[in-house]
Amino acid sequence: MKNRFCLLMAALIWGTTFLFQRISTGTIDTFSFLTLRSLLGTLALLPILLYYRRQQGRQQRSGDAVPPQGRKGWPLWVCCVLIGCILFAGSALQQAALIYTTAGKAAFITALYIILVPILGLVLYRPLRITHVLGCVLGSAGLYLLVYHGSGESFNFGDLLAFAGVLFWALHILAVDRFVEWHPGIFLAEGQLAVDVVLGLAAVVLTGESLTWQAVTATAVPLLYAGIVSSGVAYALQIIGQEGVPPTEASMLLSMEMVFGALSGALFLGETMTARELTGAAIMFAGVLAAQVPGRILWYRRPSR
Image (cartoon, rainbow, N blue to C red):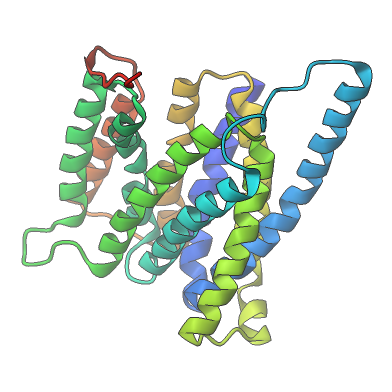
């Protein structure tokens, strides 16, 4: 029960982060926000990383077996750079999207990565199941109802940006899934955020954003929440939760992020959805859940020897 509660709390934090991201768009520029958020996240994860290293040292001194991560595959720095670049692209698209669309819609559109992951997983020799196809169909139908209003207005610019970000969130999941076979997850998390700080600073300079102290103080609460609570506390809760919950159930619990995102937008920002949009959101939610349920394998590409 404790593990499931931790996962649900992580979903709650990530869902409500859309609210704070939406608020921040009125006081600070996109790349400035991402840079400071990643910096705070790096600092928030540092105690967890130091604790992990201390535990590793105790295991080695006591003669206990240490997981053989890092003994094969690409070097840690290469993995961190790759997932850091992917994360930065997804985060930038999501943050920019919230300038033009609501927190609730962005949360539901972003959740489509859960459906896209098994489709892209075919490249990595993952099986394609009938529930993946069902989830994709339901997700597409729900997305149509959520963002297309049938009156000459289809995707607005924010919806398109959020939808483009889905690809990067899916790629991030697949990349992390592979890299954790080689390196501890906490090292990857810390490394990717450090990479994002560098990329964010470069983007601030190249785009000419004005990162002022006035903007930072005006965005203090969203920055602290997104940086420390979302990137630090929620990540720790996810690690604790997944220690005792099967991956499929964990994904279902974490997918509640979209519901919490919509609810927080409605409660605190006064965002509303039409009956059509609510129907689309419900169908998308059903599709996300369906994609996580084990089902009959339709196709499996075996690796060549």
